[in-house]
Structure formats: structure tokens, C-alpha cells
Image (cartoon, rainbow, N blue to C red; front, side, top):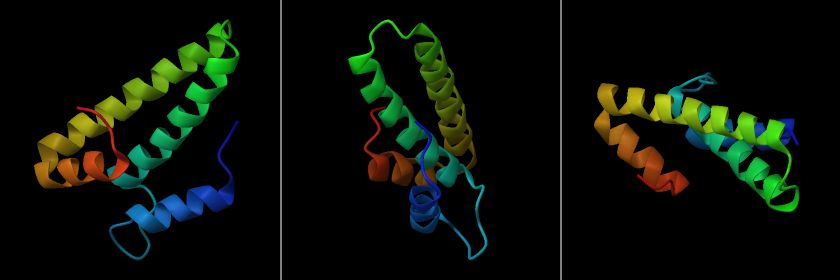
Length: 89
């Protein structure tokens, strides 16, 4: 289930770094984290939905790559994001 425009606007508002920022790594990670959580709930109900499981793994991998990038560019921003989103690492 895709996230709504309103939910995405709230995430962008919470994680933006400048007034017109919509694509910073923090925002992308926050949106992916929301999608991963929703898809995880879906897979708890539909255990044999292997296509969605593959999509979930791809989203987790993309989020991991964004987190690795953020860690190399600015470690403090990386720590802030994982703390705010409560991501294990």
C-alpha cells in the first residue's frame, strides 16, 4: 500500500534541511522506512507473498545504501537519522 501524499508531506516537513528540500538522503531514508514498515505489516498477514518480499528486500537494500552514503559524507547526520527513525545499526 503506497503512502499518501499527506503522510509524505509530513515526512518531508520533519526531515527537510532547507525550505525547498525534498530529496535529501534524510528524507529518502524516512520515506523508505515508512514503506518498509507498512510492507512488513502486510507480509505478517500474507506470508506467501513472495513478490512483495522481494520488493521489501530491495527497499531495505536501497535504504542501507543511502545510510552508508550518509555515514561517509556526514557521520553526525547519519547518527541523527538512525536515532530519530529508531533504526538498528
